[in-house]
Length: 402
Image 1 (cartoon, helix red, strand yellow):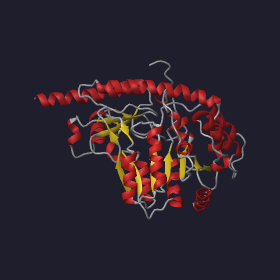
Image 2 (spheres, one colour; image 1 turned 90 degrees about the vertical axis):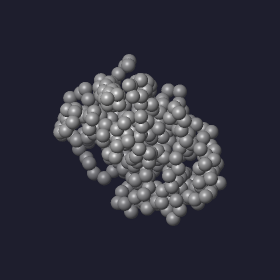
Image 3 (cartoon, helix red, strand yellow; image 1 turned 180 degrees about the vertical axis):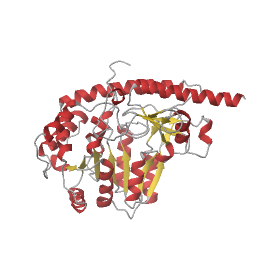
Image 4 (tube, helix red, strand yellow; image 1 turned 60 degrees about the vertical axis):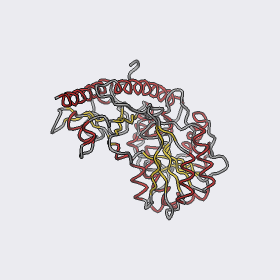
């Protein structure tokens, strides 16, 4: 794989900061655990991000700070240039926490939680957890998928569910985690028409939107929804630029009433707009320099995603997977593995047998037998992980032949 960036796994790091490690030593089982579970990238953050942190810290002043007005302009410019979506600075809320907390705030302050909240599954488990924690009655609607594990939205089915259930809110994951889809305009337009007809609030988690692979184009919900502004789009530079530890995000809010409600919720939680370090970093990465860094990483991720998908499909016990159109996550169908039928969670059984950590599909609302793998790490680690999975398949074949 050409132009491979250095990864944290190949760099010397300080033990002063505890974070997700892609390699650790196991007390039981294989000596080295390979962590392909948590969704962050095993690459250094952009130099401009690190420079922004150093510059802000060197001011010797860590007092309360106001939200960055310049950042609002950077965000509007970024949407215009990268996603062809024109928004106004007044539409933005700069939030001092991550997208999961932003989702909960949006649900608690703007959604009618006396009515069901629709979520399409499989979906990032944090969405399901946060929606339920907010007091929502979650209605899970399965995505359609074909033999290639390509998942699709079914607007007609969702329209029927909106009418039948009386759901007041739809939480959308766009692009989708874990199946990697970048939703097509026709899928989104039909869904937007159904949501408008049902007067349904749409909250769109678009944290992977800047990671659309070459040839793919993300369409922000607000750009699709037309005159119906009953929506909230949530985003962050965290996934895009590998700075999730800063825990800041932003919301593009369709109506003044919802903006006012979210500001009130922010105050009631004891927060205010802006993030001391997060704003400084976001200002510097949402620039041409940041875009060049991002484009190089996305090209690399797309190449690695294609490679590992082909490789898993060619294992002794084939592991078919989705074709990622954005991000760095692979949705794997592991139902052919014999360990998939055991009572212990599949991902845990594989970890114990191979030392490879992945997330179990049941955490995403899927049936037993599916896995999510993060491939944004050192190719040497990925090849080691694949070799261990191949060995597991060979062991299962030998067991069957005995």
